[in-house]
Amino acid sequence: MEPATQAEHVCTEPTDPRIRRTRQMLQSALFNLLNRKHFNDISISDIATQAGVNRATFYLHYTDKNALLQAMTEARFRELLDRRGVVFGCEGVLRSLALGVCDFLSQTGGCPEQLASMPLETSIIPVVEGMILHGLRVHQAPPETPTALIAATVAWAIFGAAKQWIQTPERLPAEEVATTIETLVKPIFSAIPAAH
Picture 1 (tube, rainbow, N blue to C red):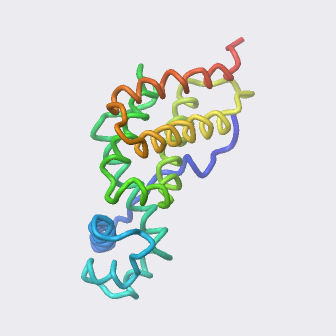
Picture 2 (picture 1 turned 30 degrees about the vertical axis):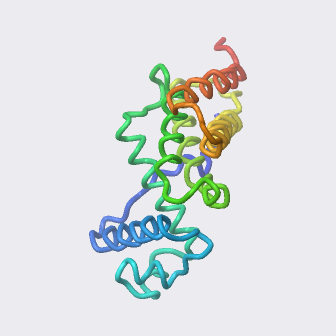
């Protein structure tokens, strides 16, 4: 099996409730601003003001607004997957992951044009990759299995298809496109060598 990758990182929340609360306030502020402004037009000052903190406090928690967007996206995406009960190994996990990504993109603030320019993939893809890598470990893929490559390919395929779907006018229902994504992505797992 290949060494652990960045995609397998566990989202560790700080234990101090003040830190968690401040980060939640900053993430909520960005989410609310995205409903009114384009991401590129939102400043650190806008976010800090909306959250009721100063700029210095913002920088204690995030290096820039892209880091905040990534943290907010990852937290919201993980919550959505938890609500859906998505775990690797159950039948239909690829469909569930695809539906989760579609649901997330459809719930994200802003218009489809804004989604095209927001770096959401840096938050969503590592979560999907991590779940697939974990599943491959649990199901004891043979040591020669290119697990990182498989996980990355599947995660990017799911995200890319879902992003294309959200930008399509008069698109199919999410459930229908998730089934199509599952059908297209499932053959990637045929790269896993048969057990000897």
